[in-house]
Length: 470
Image (cartoon, rainbow, N blue to C red; front, side, top):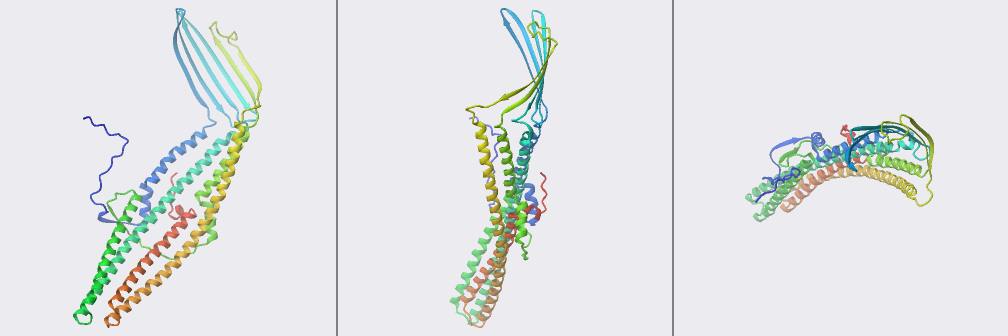
């Protein structure tokens, strides 16, 4: 059987990897390097830059509104009429141009050739026309499409900034998730080693007759539980690696390792300064403000369309030729100047409909701007209080971890002298493991809250010193 050829536009489905988790030699990467790789290879950013190609061309097309337009039309035909064959050809170049005042001018030249009975008949017509609107379509309203296109270009630029900012924030969050997963493995290994040390101590105490042999079962169970926790931490690390590799568009089999630490120094936040930065740099607030300006331009156009169509017109034409069928004004010039007026009387509600739609659109844009501004302020306030709250949680987690470690040391000393049970030591060991995990989570959460605050006030690109090549 004939097999169909594969489509050149279809993407081949890669076979499943031989190893489901990243493996091989570890490759250490810093957070700054991860962000740089994401800016270079992330597919979402690449797609956004591809969209910018069409958006820039849209702006260019809008900017050509007042440029001359040149076109040419031509045709050749052969016919038979009453047994007489004839061939005709026509060529007509034309130049038109719109001025910022609304004036529309055009120049056309037409040449007709006809071959019949061995004779050639020619005719040439030159025409120059000029129309200047005095009411509808006159004045600054003609600049509205260009102004609207420039505002849209600014909105598109803000959209690109927002896309890059979101991707950078996602990379930062994913990188810290990998750090957290790596630290969880380290903490699980420490907890496992502590439990193994306790198991060795218990065996020594059993040999010395200071502990019943049955009591060691609890410690052996603790070792097994710690081994399970270590396996779970390894699984979480593999998932964090795959998530980061996806954002960086790297081979999912790469054994990537986060090399940066998680220093958590307190950062003082000025709420008023954060609100000021948010009003000046938030992409959604600026975009909604520009949308209001676009709606105002559309409303001015809609109001202008309801005016009477009063225009001053002038034309100049000239004919030359040797065809007897042409106008008797051969080689002469025809000039005309006058006014035209068009008044809608009844039945045409399109202009009124356009004005109503533009008025409602402006009001909706203003409401959206107000809602976006208020939401942005609420989000910034919430982000600031979240940063402060997460710092207090981190300090409390550090104190809790220190107390849990001290309590475990005390119980271990008591166990040596027979003043504490094996079960109590294992319980305090579990408390320390939980305190370690809580402190680690609090540290990562505090850093993530700072990153979220940067995102809320629109300063992510400034924080990472990213200059977009737009």
